[in-house]
Image 1: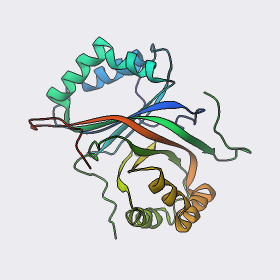
Image 2: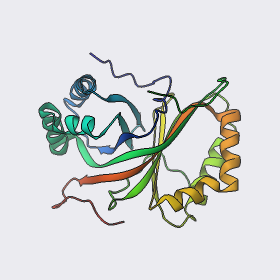
Image 3: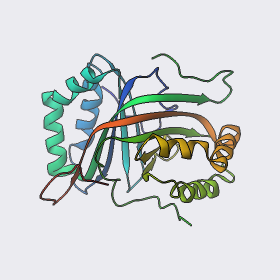
Image 4: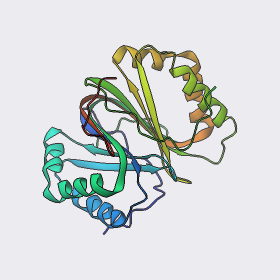
Amino acid sequence: MSDHPEAPVAPVEAFEPPYYVAVFTTVRTDEQSGYRETNARMEDLVKDVPGFLGTDHAQTPGGLGITVGYFRDADALAQWRSDAEHRAAQERGRADWYRSYTLHVAKVERSHGFVRGDTGQSPSAG
Amino acid sequence: MSDHPEAPVAPVEAFEPPYYVAVFTTVRTDEQSGYRETNARMEDLVKDVPGFLGTDHAQTPGGLGITVGYFRDADALAQWRSDAEHRAAQERGRADWYRSYTLHVAKVERSHGFVRGDTGQSPSAG
């Protein structure tokens, strides 16, 4: 089980395009019972999707949350999108946890990364 | 001047595809002098770019920051990318403010949004 760390040491790297990002921006309600457990379960479940590359997450206390999922191709995204347990979690999210959210699914055309002290820059192959 | 609010009330809406997202994920250093002022200036400056649609930002305290910029087309992104003041800020960021970052530039193919209490769902035109 993931322990859903709140302070990752580094962002997900730049992969070689093309790949996909799913940008999920949320504002949550005061009703958060079950959210943490379901979120941890989703983080585990998505790792089983072939072509899943990683996620980044940031949460402003009391404000906006942003989760970015990275996927190798449209098939990987489609598989995650159609997962029954994932769909049930989405339904629960609309019923209870989210005041508002937006999802943007996009194909990456260009990427690069920077790591302090590195001699070179990416993009690096995933 | 923007006051760079830390707790926006709602995420940027789902626009009608295609449009572009620039996903910028960062971990910062302990050296943050000038960061806040420069960030506020960039938030103002990008609004002058024709085709700029908005930004979302979330920051986990002591952890990952994610900024997502939304642009109508590749021309808008190119204009922002080549802005001289923006390039100087990027250089300062690599010299001082960022331990690591990744930039993913991607063309949105699909989007939708949810607002609690709304009768319908988006995508909505920008």
